[in-house]
Length: 141
Figure 1: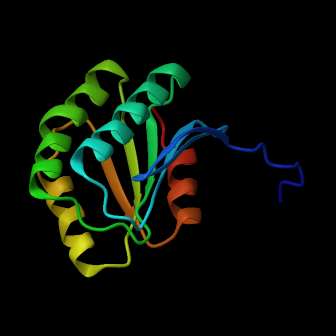
Figure 2 (figure 1 turned 180 degrees about the vertical axis):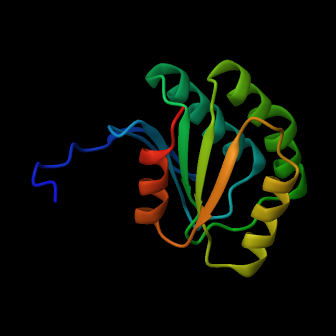
C-alpha cells in the first residue's frame, strides 16, 4: 500500500454547470452540479475543460455526473459534433471515465452521447469515482 500523501487536485474553473480541476495523476476532473444549466453555461464549462486539457497536456477525462440533469438534445448534439471532435484533434483526448448519474433519464442521455460520439475517444462507465480514477490511471496512452 502506498503510504505517500496524495497530491491535491488543482482547481481550475467553476460555473453553474460544475467544477473543473486537474488531477496530478494526469487527468481532468469534471464534477457536474445538480443545477440545470442553460446550454451557453454548459458550452462554457466544456470550453474550459478543453482549455485545461490543452494547458495540462492531459489526454484523460473523469466526468462525475452525480446528480446532473440530462443534457438537452441540442447540448448533446453540440457535444458530439463540435466539442468531442475538437478535444480529440486539438488536445488528443483519448479516455473518458464517466461516473454514472443518479437519474435514470440521465443515464439514457449519457448512453445516447456515448453511442453517437466520434471514434477516437474511449469511454468507460462506472458507479463510483474511485473505480473511474483507477481505470484512468492504468489507461495507457
